[in-house]
Image (cartoon, rainbow, N blue to C red; front, side, top):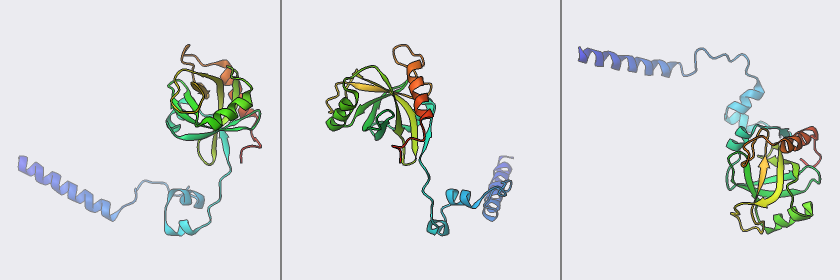
Amino acid sequence: MRQKMVIYVTIFLISLAVFAGLFPYPIFSDYTNVTRENMLEINNFSETELSVQKKSEPRVESLEWKVVDLLMEYDKTYKLIDLESGAEIYIQRTGGINHAEVETIDEENTLTLKELLGSFSWERRGCYLQLNDNLYVCASLSCFPHGENKLENGLGGHLCLHFKNSKTHSTNIVDKGHQKAIKSAQKSFPYEKID
């Protein structure tokens, strides 16, 4: 009985492999809604590689913190654009669970931040975090260095970068001031400093 079962399973698996070889595409797929533009994005055929690709326009999103938390890598350099002044500061994520803990990447960027602020404060500043070439995320920066400092940048601590529905560490609640700054950034788009 056991040998028959092994034979039946073997025959079934061989039949399945032959069937899959003859019909490599999913039978129940609906290909009627696939446009040429979708095909260029999905497929990597040599013909599509030769066709001219349009550069997509930069876009600004107000992403939930739980999404940004997955997208924003540790120890990677990101550009941060201040909403009020248009100043660009380069930062790295060095920590953070309820929001991102960030630091300026070097002393030059720390000086840029100091010049922008005049003096460090807990003021919430609306800004844009550039996640990739075309995606900017509305954010709010708390501009007072505190806690651990991991980079040699003369900052003396880290800064807190908040996103939609992120929370503070101390109170574990969504901070209204940060959310207001994020909404200001969202309302101010299109922003002339983003190219």
